[in-house]
Length: 328
Image (cartoon, rainbow, N blue to C red):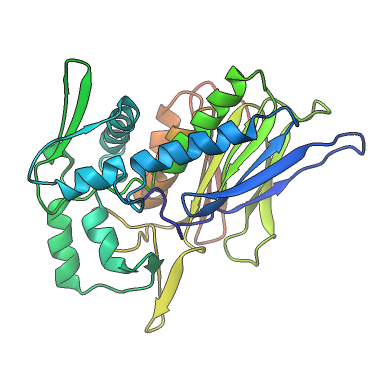
């Protein structure tokens, strides 16, 4: 699974920055993980370190980066274990935690299926049913072996046809790493936008909350159904309208159901998760989209400090509170 792949969903946020005329934030942007990443905030932000941090992470977990750690793990599947950094090791541990938490609705080794839907990096191919059936045989997370020896970390894929694709967790991890870097640099207010994975650190300069608009999935870009206000929280949305194609009158999108290998179609067309942990939001936004409204609602309600906004096929907007939350 790619680091949310170069053409992966540019998630559905319209970022609304209501700044006063006396507020002069600085915005820098760069291409990392194949998407436009923007950082907005004080001119004291160490932008060079931000881009270095993101590219360093990309060199570890982006399967599209030749000889990245994950690329090496995939290449050695069924042959031998690969030594990786503690960063990559910890990310895989986290991915496995959320895979188990969601009963497999989030799966970090769905690469053998995802690659069937692609021509290069473009999501545009409808695979044959038998190809999907074969690909699904190589997505068992129990065949991922993690080991640690003398302070070194190793990952081994027992199945030679198994492939990691970390598209459902990568940008969340990246947002959390940038947040940590900025806090360590004495920056407590910034807007981190990594191709749509949003993190609003602190408040804006005028003391107000960051305002994030959630795109109407059935409308033109820029038309939003709801605006949420966040402080020190991430907002991550999974939706079907950014990367899709139509074949014989049927719309197919990139959010695949790991149980079928096909585009998820369980009644949710937009899944937004809000929490201070962007990595968790990234995993859960995809998982909830796949799970459908009943299971997704129960999951979010069982978690401490999470909020969710689900848009259904019917057009209904359902807001769900986890434990210990105030109103969205």
